[in-house]
Length: 342
Ligand SMILES: NCCCNCCCCCS
Ligand SMILES: [Zn+2]
Image (cartoon, rainbow, N blue to C red; front, side, top):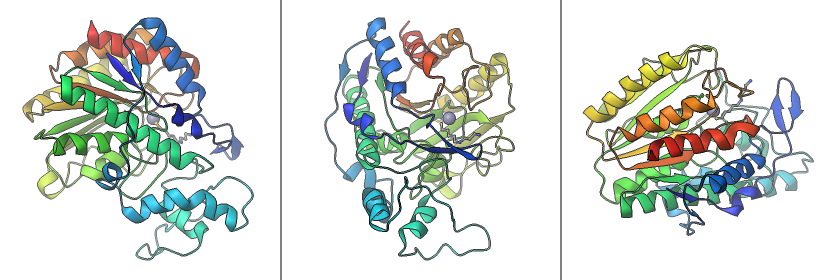
């Protein structure tokens, strides 16, 4: 299996994350890449390639133009406004406020476009996000051309990024960008299976009214898990998209047996929908040792996951999402990919 990866993913060097009332070293750190690359090389899974630069068009196919312009300019505008730290929002168009107008102030724009306050914007963030979607597109193009599975070592991740919203460490929705490209290349329906511990609110939102992308997510119950305000089981899509969005919220501490039984339901839905490509939003924060999550996968369970996904019999693109137990991330990711190829 080929891996696609870009050194430009390291351009995102955020120093702060607002967590538990303090500014801490971000969980979504460049070292995550080092461990995955190390284990990929040790495993002999396949070559690691640098993708082409696909430009802005694929981004604008799923994201709002003004939002993309905001992301491109935010860091410079934030500094020009005299702010000394990293760009962290502290005001939102929260309930009781209006969101039909975008303020001129960069502080106002930051809150307008932010999902949450844990994700700072700093130098290199935009460039890294551009590299990350190129990684996803490189993996996608390879699978479209060869039918072979591929892995996009995407950083920053993407599944929390919505049409015009960043957060949860995400800026561009890599899986959505890849799915849209696959449809433009002729696939009639694409399944995005999100196995990350956290609900892929951004991916859901982008395709919520569409029937050409089936979005299915297994995740921590939003009653008690980030992102809290989306990911409930009663969110089934709207209009043409009715029935093409399926959420499986699961309680913290869910056993792997229960998680795998839920996966069976998800895979049956994918099969019934006659999808022609499977994109897996691969978050390995379902690992028992993840510092900000609450599921119970062991590293060996990731191998079983990969084996089961292969049985879906679809061309498959794996795209890196979360996973914050840095020491184990390499083993866990490679176990999925090797399990798939067994
Ligand atoms: N106390 C947990 C706060 C979580 N904050 C953001 C998590 C983003 C996960 C991306 S996969
Ligand atoms: Zn996650």
